[in-house]
Image (cartoon, rainbow, N blue to C red):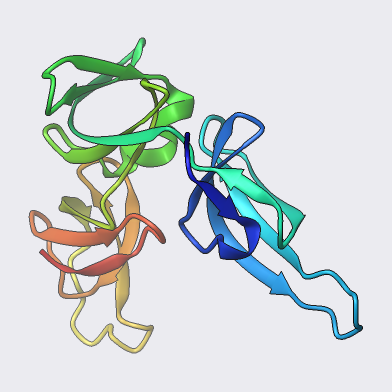
Amino acid sequence: MAALIDAIDVKRKTLFELENTPFCCLEADVNTPTARGGQTLVRLKMRNLLTNAVFEKTFKASDKFKEPDLQSVQASYLYSDGDGSHFLDQESYETVTLNDQMVGDALDFLIEGALIELRRYNGNPIGLELPIFVELDVAYTEPAVRGDSSGGGTKTARLETGLEIRVPLFIKEGEKVKVSTENREFAGRA
């Protein structure tokens, strides 16, 4: 029997199951009424892990959710083709194929051999979780112009995956940079 989670205990990044579907909480807001006898409500912004749809819903504080049957296994990215994106499960060494909907925009951060967490729900692959930061090579960027630091000191750089981000002026082609997968921003030199 899976453990039950009270709605009031759901916090950011908590995984729970609602109507036989796994969800991840993105934001939780507890609303306690001032009147006596008023019911405490919990407003959750949540992501459906099967469809990646994001929506908000309000629950009573006493509502209970099941813990989902989710496993995360380490996998490495192999390649993408017309059938989907292919990953190698690092435990069983079997190839797992995810469709475009399951991968989403993660391909902007994936190079061959990159390690990710592959999520399985009831034994079936449903998606992946990227590390917080990835290191990618700068494929193209304009050379810095001397004295051009008054405009904020950033320029556009195209990374080896095709992703374009803003980087400081001192970054050159061929350098490795650290990129945040959450906000798609430059996080430092690698």
